[in-house]
Amino acid sequence: MRLRLRIFNKIDDIPINIKFILISIFCVIIPILTVNLIFLNSLSKTVREREEENFKISYERAKTDIVNVIRESVAVSHSIYTDADIYRELDRFYEKGEYYSVFISSLRERTGRYLAIYRNISNITIYTSNKTIDSGGHFIVIDDEIRESSWYKKNKEVDGRPVLYAFVEPREYGEGKYKEFLSLIRTMDGYQRGMHDRVLRIDIDTVWIRDTLKREEDYLSLYVVDNEGRVVLSSKEYIYEDNDAYNFINFDDLPFDKEELLLDHKLGEALYMKGWRLIGVPNEEKVYMAMKQSRNFILLLAFISMLVSGILVWIILSSYNYRIKRLSNHISKFGDGQLDLIILNEGKDEIGQLIRKFNKMAIRINNLINDIYKLEVQKRDLELERVQAEINFLQSQMNPHFLFNTLNAMLIVSVKNNYTEIIDVIKYLSKTLRRLLSWKDDLVTVEEEICFTEMYLKIEKFRFSEKFKYDILIDDDVRNFKIPKMSIQPLVENACKHGIQNIKGQGNIIVEVKLYEEDFEKNLKISVKDNGIGISEEKVAEILMNLEEDIYTTGSIGIRNVYRRLKLYYGKDFKFFIESKKDKGTNVSFIIPLESKLSDLAHTKDM
Image (cartoon, rainbow, N blue to C red):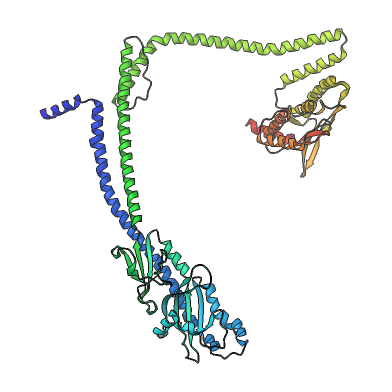
């Protein structure tokens, strides 16, 4: 017990900063390094095993593709070998020019059809000693040069059995001096010996095989080795011997350590490719790069782990120091009468609980000192707000009365001095203002809206005199239908301000309200026409687009307000039109449902 107390006493004497540093070194950094080193060793082994498995998969993929194309060649050779028509046609004696028709009608299709099906077979050729045929296409007459060729001698060596053979021949055209061949060769004696020799040669596309080998270069360097030990095809550049001809080099002469070989298997057990092998040399650089990436990842992970743990230790240490210092400073200020709260995220640990208790104590002391003072301040604020409300109320009543009293005074003076025109204008202006102030309902009759609009037109008539006239055309049947207020007057005001104000001749405005039938349904159509300066088609399109997208633009405030009011009440059940031509006037109109439908919409809004 004494030893334990002595140890704890020693620990208590260590500053908290040093304690956190010791904890981070012995409890974080050293364990992280140990675990990552163990993990790196295990991961390196796993990476190598994975890459070796990838080598095998790459090898098997290339081997399968090559064996398949060889088997396809064998299948084609068997089909041609058993074709009795080819035997019959090749044993015939042909007069001059007779062979060509037989070739076109029969022989060409017998061999050519396989090339269209098997894309990896580059050519099919049948060699015959029948000199009455014409060499060409897929049928060639055997001459002395062919008899001396290596592939023909190879066929004789195996007594005409199917054999896979690689050889080179001089190139007649194209790049390079020589061309390599990988061919399946067999003597055609399936039915009878006949009077002529027949040798079938199927050439496999070596370019395709080379591309197949190069496809796997990321994993393996692949070599196709024949039964004589020659490298006939490779994923590397072809290897030339130092002489005038192109010869295949022996695999044993290649300049690399044969102990590095990982994969060396036969291409197949069939007699025609007996001894043929596919050899794969692994790309050790890829294994090295994979292991290097794994090592870098582990080191980065270890660095990030230590960095994060170091930052975390620093944050925790800073949190402790910062809160303890703030608490100590506020306690010191208490003696000076400063009862400030500690404003910070105190946390839920022991230091946080201590800060919360300190704040509660400070709040209680502040409340005891300030409650009465705060109540007095609140009473004064309420009294000021009440007085301000009364002043605003009286002012809102006084302003309209003051305006009407002023208009009445002007009216009395005009009557005394017999200013008849001014008398009418003042009357119309006074009625207009009273109507605006007294209109509380959002829905008014067509008659009320027209009366209000006409008072505005009379004022404009006084303003423009003989330069301006207007007509109001209204069906008697629609006068009592209700519409949203201020849905006609803004259009008339817009026509006066932007349409006829700047023309030289007499301005004319026509307001028309009538029933409109569409799709067997009666609606209300309202239009405001003027003979003003008009609007260009581009501007009309811009205004309509801005109305739909609710974009504010100068010069179309009245139209915009009417459109928004109609949309508010009718949603999508109204139509709005602007028809205008430059210097020929403008017609703004809209079609809305009748009163019954509007009433339903208004009732829905009230709900």
